[in-house]
Length: 214
Image (cartoon, rainbow, N blue to C red; front, side):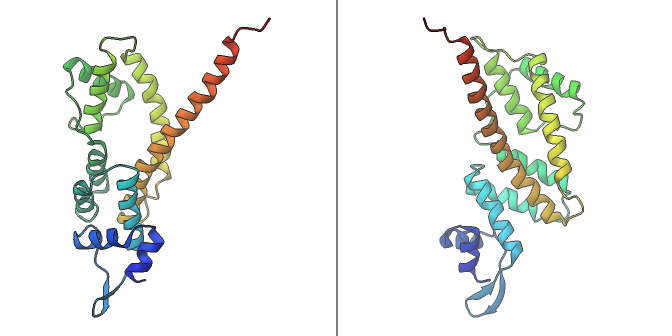
């Protein structure tokens, strides 16, 4: 397909596609003539990943290069590639300062869950500790080990199911595309479903607590 068809099928502005090509974020097509190149399904998949990272994940263009370099490095194991992508996606904005006691709470939860392979430098670990610091500040909210472990148990079921859904026999690039899009999109899907569940259950509680007329 020509670049114009590629842009149309991916529902991305042609100017954006050309920008990605200039910046090396999208691989060059196969040259078929002067000022003419052909693109295939691999370009379409990559373009969709870039679009999801930008529009859903909110990843700035400057950070997309880190993702692309990791995706295109055949010597980087799939798991290591995903940790790079996870840190780039999470690091917007940078985590706030974490108190030592908050990091200790997070690490206690990770240990209780048996999540021994989480990196100490993980941006997700640091961001969670930042949230724990906020929750345990002045106010009615609190985030102790028991509460966080409850959330971790729910997250563990979801994470296990999502990883099991990845086709680990597929080519490296396709595995990574599945995992990247899943992390970005289904993270948003879960958040939205949780919000809808809150709306439903709060409406039910409100009706039960409403005073009976008359």
